[in-house]
Length: 193
Length: 157
Image (cartoon, rainbow over all chains, first blue to last red; front, side):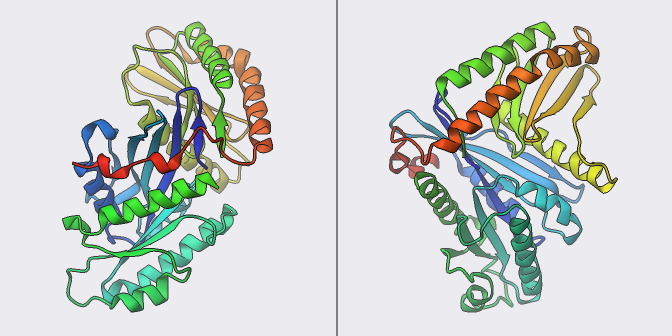
């Protein structure tokens, strides 16, 4: 749910990076954090285990000012991908304005992609969010690894709503910005409606 | 969508500032459950990042609420976290918003904070209710915001 403050001229939107464990959700927002101008970002928060697996969520606030003096603040969150954190994932989706589904392109991780997508659909239903309506972008990550599925296969199995999708190598920043720009564009467009 | 008009923002800010002064808190924040900072007291001395604080508070409340549900309780109404020097008291308003007081334990205590919150609780709740009713009546975002103007390309180095 976007929040607009007309006194401080701020618009706040929540974007969640969702996907199976180790698909690269944290890598995506870490890359954005590292490459954004310091004046446009807040502190990055990571709630992770000792082995750097996301335990609850990562969070990065990003601020964009526009010419009419309105500031848009995007709050980027990642969910914990591991199966055991199902309950935590649902909590993070509360009030979401846009979702990036980060899929792992490796063949052996495809079942995890499909299970996580089902889990996301269920969680959205519980919040009465219509997946047909919510801004959604797919990212097929790890395109540099061997044993990856063709994009057509990933698209057919995951992107059932024909949403914009991108190939990515998040560790190198490939496709990260494109994905981020697309989801913010969709979120802002929805706001206008 | 939730929005605050300047007069609503001022009312909330005034109330939170009064509450902050009377409870001798460092800062009082009003947050929604999805982690957005809605308003805060005028507390220039508070230097932490309030936006980040809001997102962590919402996460904290969400996890505790889920825990209380697991235990079979209906809902969570308030929470208290203590660090060596500070107390953080969080109370839910209308099940949707979180009012947070951060106080220095040498200058205030949980009892004072709770009494003072009780004094202002209803008033804050009423303002939020009025805001929701107004938002309900408005169909779309006003024309003064032109989202086309927003240029993401300038964001990155």
